[in-house]
Image (cartoon, rainbow, N blue to C red; front, side, top):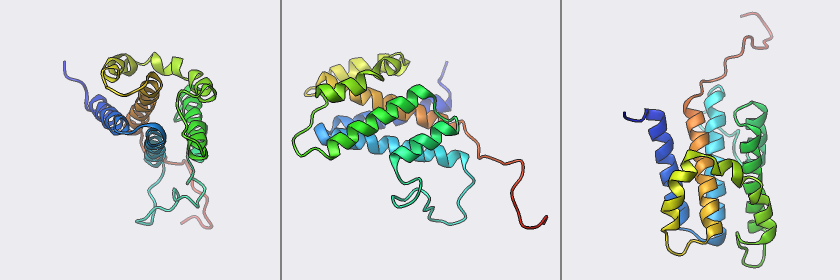
Length: 183
């Protein structure tokens, strides 16, 4: 039995994210992972929104209300697009990314403070069939610490989940639209 197109699309996203992250270490690995999640959240939110009347949708630019990773996480949660465990995982990665970006020394995913944040969300992700399928492949990659492997697995599973969810969405159609006239 062949997998359905949505499963194939999610698997392709997971593969691309994992490959991109495996090429990085340290700060680069964390920043690439967070950026991929930020983009996946933007895609998910755009999937349920009415299209922008402008060709260049500025709603998600950094100086606008949905320009931050945290704002996208909050909106996706409030709209019911992600559950509380996905929200917690995305926020854990957001705080790890912020710690990496604002650390003058060479940060590490093995730092006990960062591990404490990530260890809260790993058990949920590790129950995913993707974790079981991808973990042996990452273990074979030379030069990746166990902390980097777990982080890559977490990000990969999150991106695949967000993208699969996006593919199942339709644009929001309100029952009514506020207007000045009845036309």
